[in-house]
Image (tube, rainbow, N blue to C red; front, side, top):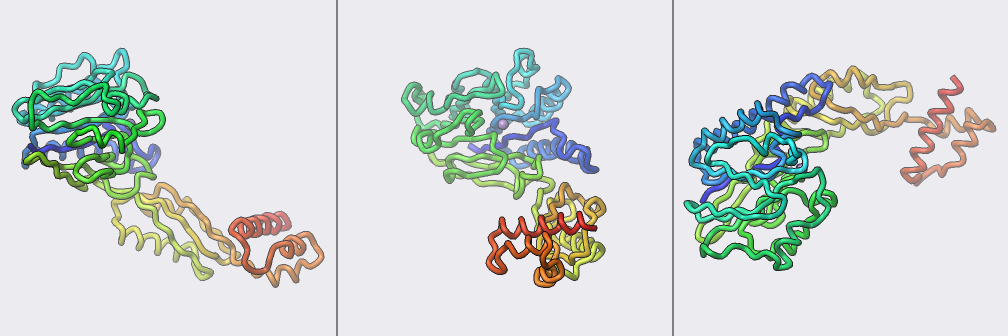
Amino acid sequence: MKFVHIADVHLGAAPDVGYPWNETRQQEIWDSFRRVIDGIKEEGADLLLISGDLFHGQPLVRELKEVAYLFEGIPGTTVVLIAGNHDYLKADSHYRTFAWPENVICLWEDHCVSRYIPHIYTYVYGMSYVNREILEPVYNQTYDDGATLLESEHADACHILVAHGGDEKHIPINMRKLADVGFDYIALGHIHKPQILQENAIAYAGVLEPLDKNDIGKHGYIKGVFENGKISAHFVEAACRSYCHEEIQIDTATTQLSLADRIRERMQACGADNIYKLTLTGYRDADVTFALPQLKTLGNIVEIVDETQPDYDFDRLSEQYEGTLIGKFIDSFPKEGRTRVESKALYYGLQAMLEAKE
Ligand SMILES: [Mn+2]
């Protein structure tokens, strides 16, 4: 039995509002989802597990029709769908009334239920969010205290829990206890970073496309197979681009134009399509300040943090301003071995005083 596990597709999301690539990214989220379906068409899969937050918010009927069209294109694949905290089953949610193709199983219940899929000897378990938050550890409450046992009518069947959450406000999960329940695989959603928590057994697929500058690293989905009573599963990279955090080291020779060249080179080397958060560090010439808005237009740059410090000659300044507030301020700090906080206080304080004097 072959399966594909995706989560947190967030169709309808609009990452980086106000940036030039915003519309492209909206489209790429749909493209990536379509590519997963195309991949299933080509390579085949018995099961497509979607662990919540397929949509970024309440889905429109038009959007559900697009998704249904894609599911219809893989009639040999059973699609298992749960609603997460973003696309939760609001009272008037179109999810509740939408007519899905025959190959789609929606676990819309607000408590854990199971469904048996006879032709692939597989039980799927799961539930959906009917609110934005669920504070109770529902999965642990249901299974690991023995309240609900796994189905046993069909021996040797595969048991898969499709789950969403794992933080304080979204169904806290005690993974260690849940791991002992006996599921063959736990297909998790909600945490954006893909993580294999237990090899071939418990995994967060992560967002299909990164949505936020903090969703750094690789993104995609999980592909697996259940054979001879055993799961083997691995992560597949699939996102169109990544967010990258890069540090650029400045020195006293760096100018605005030379910095621009270095940023261009760095983005070229790391992938021009990627989206960058840059941090400038080091000591700059005390006369130089970098014009960040101009640098931001060099590529897909979502943020530049300037942590550079002016390369002050403290001995000279302390001599020059001897007996004044500035001189006393400099002398109040240790000459060597300053802590990070002391160093920051000295630079920012001195900068403010020198600027005020000008
Ligand atoms: Mn979520």
